[in-house]
Length: 255
Image 1 (cartoon, rainbow, N blue to C red):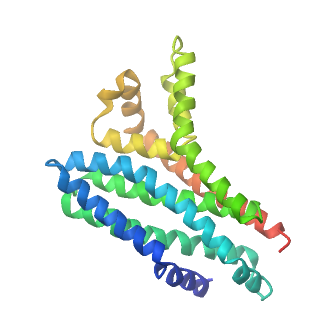
Image 2: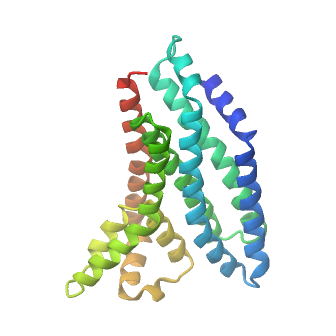
């Protein structure tokens, strides 16, 4: 398993797309901090961009990589290698490789310009989103044999979490505006890891006042110990659930 993880990592870090992704994040991060005279504003701009780019590239690249490795995977399946170990190694290698890109592309500039807790939360959020969207990509790749369909499913997942979910949330809040939805909105954020990451970073920036009474409820909940337990459990579920489903489906798949 270690050899397979090492092989996947070496193969991915040499990939031109991952190298370009790392350089793009690096230039983007330095650009955001250079354009703003205040590092907090630079972090806010970087957050808005990274919460879109990191999930998008993680899910699309991972989906394509799994499909392009189909022959290699079939070859290993014919060998005395457990399917669970094979798919777990693939996930681990993909996740660690893309996390390295995030650490260099976002972590390094944040370390130089802003060593605050907010910067640390932003980097950790990008790392966790990478792990979550690689897991979703793995699930999408295992569900369907067709490469075009798999990539289409991945794009739809990213589109849903990045854009459609917020529109649905606003629609629900508008339709039930006569009812107290502050507590319910906390539960709804658990259904979208991107929104959860955004709220966490914004609360660290002390911008809850801009979100009205709901922001005060969020600040009170997410900054308490129960809030950290809630976040930890939700994030773990978002990583473990799609990975477990992908492993389970791969073990039953007729290759």
